[in-house]
Image (cartoon, rainbow, N blue to C red):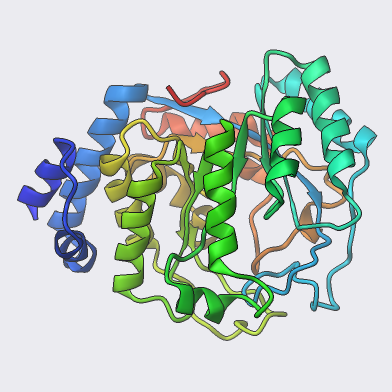
Length: 344
């Protein structure tokens, strides 16, 4: 195992068999060594800085019926909302006053938040806060829409591919969605010039070790600037309500592997990790992550954007909890960095 880790740290592209060996190794000293190496690599690039992004959840309407998602179109229990332009700009104003210099606009694929609306909002944010980065996470769009958002001032786009295996993709999504279109979107985003992010859910129903290996190989080929992975967590009003949550330990192992494979990538310690484990965020950072995304959404809607059960959105997961977040980071020797934190 040490040989594989050292080869990764040296920039070597491991075979699928070698990656599989890293994924199935027993927990214990081997995992600790892997995380130690990933942490050293992250610190060599970023020091002990952890970038913060202000997350604004703009709408929980969605045209899709993904089987794992709590805001899926077919969930009648969701109390729907969508933020208007003024609401979003107020979130940005508040976030800017707190020190945020990246805003992340995330939402379901809401048919009423049109491309024109997104262009208008992005243009307004860019005019008001020219020193800030704007990240979008609004799902699958035609290339023309991505180009319009980019020209309006968006810098980054997050779109997890979820799984590279086409058959597994069909297990997670309805028939009208396709893995090939998701991959087309990602290639379009990179080609346009976005700092592009992708990633997977760890432990999603039907996922195998070979699926994860294929995901690692795809991410290596795509070479995204951002990589977001977190454990699958079921939602009570989805077809996967009774499925088990993904493994925190495997998620941390993957964070470390991806840090070694992509030493310059921006990798968040996700809210899903913090939801499953109180110290999940800190453990993600110690495994090689270097980004956190406190929630800037209005308090009145945070509980309505529930992608999975018991999603954390308060305390150190919130914009109001930055002092609490810094105290938590102090315990592991890290500090908040309020800079844009662009990929270099």
